[in-house]
Image (tube, rainbow, N blue to C red; front, side, top):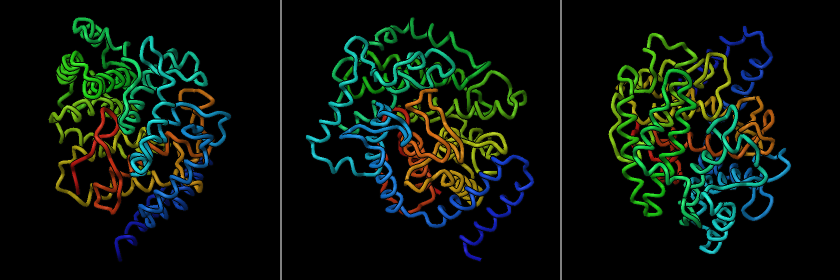
Length: 407
């Protein structure tokens, strides 16, 4: 039997094992994996994927440089325009625009910047959560958006209009160390990790793109602090022993670690405990192929949070194992690919990003965030597996850094 035939047989066996589930949502998921995931993987071809994504982006475009987060949203928002830049860059079409066009897009993005603190404020997104009040903390909002904005501006080869003045206090190393030391990893390490990633990516950006030399000492201080807290049994960050972590806590530990590793990667540092990282992540892949509790609906974040470090730090000589893990993951991700060419965040489920109506997508509805994050994940996976593609993966602080590992 050929490779595709073997893959279909394995996937069918996994799917059939789930058909005893009592919830209708599970039947929906099985159907999506069978009708979209397996078919999408066996027919995956870069040029078609690229064309479909660009068509989706065009469908939510409302004017030059403005996009809605999802088709059902009533207005465009800044997050969506940023994701459009990142997608065009990743797909290799942004650099085909004229310099005037790129500058105009950058002017649009920079029109949202405040001269007071250097952060970006979209009136359409104004709410307490955007100011990091409430359950989302820094998983959405002004500091979180900055981590995406810096990649968009780097892609456009333009810097912000104003200095990032909100960073000033972090150049004081005494203040920075007190700030870091008020966090611990005993409870919700994922929430803590967002604060760190939002800060160090901005510091790396101002150092390398805005020539802010004071940022380097702060960056190195964060590097050393995190290295001192890394747990050698897993290569991740948690205060409980590996044996005390519940199954659900392990997923949050992985999700948090994804927010820490790019600091070391971008700084060109070797990440310790690679084997432990790999061995901790492998067993957490669920029946569907995603990374959340078994039977759970892993979203675009949960999946790339596990797959990125797994691909970067894989040390196993068992190529058959890692190939199977990544193929199953790709089938799961492609189960969220929709007929409009974009991707949903979840498979057959609604997503409320930041709890805001303008960053919410309905069941089976593509969103700009999910389309960017799923595409980036597929780019890493296709490169790792040696599948033909022309993705233009950049090297920027934070989310987008090439993976050198290959199968």
